[in-house]
Length: 357
Image (cartoon, rainbow, N blue to C red; front, top):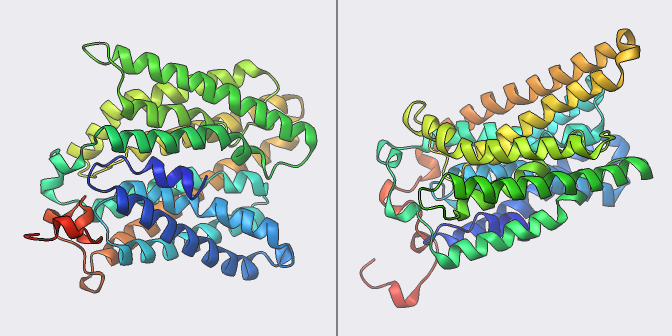
C-alpha cells in the first residue's frame, strides 16, 4: 500500500509522473527507517519485536505520503526529505503521548495518520503557495495515461485498505469485524462516488478525480471504529457520508482553501483524508458513548480522552506543519521557482527533450 498504492495514486499529474512515483518511494523508505529508529527510544516495549516495529513504521509514514499530496510538484527532493524527517518525528511524539500518557489504544493512535498528514501538509503547502498558483495552470492537469496510473493506485489501495484498518486490532472477532465493515464502507463510498460524479457534471459524465478520492474515503472514515461496529448498516452510512463529503468537498472546500485561505491543495487531500478522517474520529466517539451508555459514569472519561487525543493530534500537526513550511522556504532548501513547478524535467533526465530546456 505504501509503495505501490500511494505512489501511483499521486501520479495523476501529466508532467509529474516520474517525480510522483520516484519521490514517493524515496520519502517512504527514509521515513520507515527513521520511524523505526525513533520507536526504539519512544516505545521500548517493542524493541525486540522487529516485525511489528516495521509494521507500525510503515503505517506511520503514511502521514508523509498524505502530506506530499498537498505539496506535490512544489517541493524538491531535499524539501520532501526534510519534511518527512520532521513530520515523522512529530507524529511519533504525538503517538507516544496518546499511547503512554492518554492511554489510547495503539490501533486508534495510528489511525490519526490521515488527520495528522492532512493538516500538516496543508500548513506546509500554505508557505509554498505562490499567488500565481491560485489560478489553474496547464501543468496541473492530467491526461489519459496519468489518470490510468492513478486509478491503478486507487484500485490497489481499495483492495488492501481493510488490512490497513484491521492489522493492529486484537482479537479474531474484532479483526474480522474490521475487515467486513471496511469493505461495506468502501463499497458504498464507491457507488456514491460514481453517482455524485455523474450528477455534478452538466453532461452527466464521470470525472476521474472524484473516483480517485471518494472510493477510498469510506475506508478512511472506518479506520477508528471498524472493529467495534456491530451492524453493517452503520459502516455503510459512514461510507455514504464519507463519499458525499469527498465529492462535494472538492467543489466547496477546495475552492475555499484556494481563494479565501490562499492554500493550494493540489491533490484534494483535505476532502479525501482530512474530512473523512475527522468524520471517522467523531463517529468513533459517538459509537463509544452509545455502546457504553449504561456504564457512562465510568466510560465517560475515556470518551473525553479520545476527544483530547484528537485535539492534540490536530494541534501538533498544524503547529509543526506551519513551522516546517517556514523552514522549507529558507534559501538553503533551494525551492524551485514557480515556472518549474509540476514538471519532471527539473529533476529527471530526458535525453530527447534536453535541448532548449
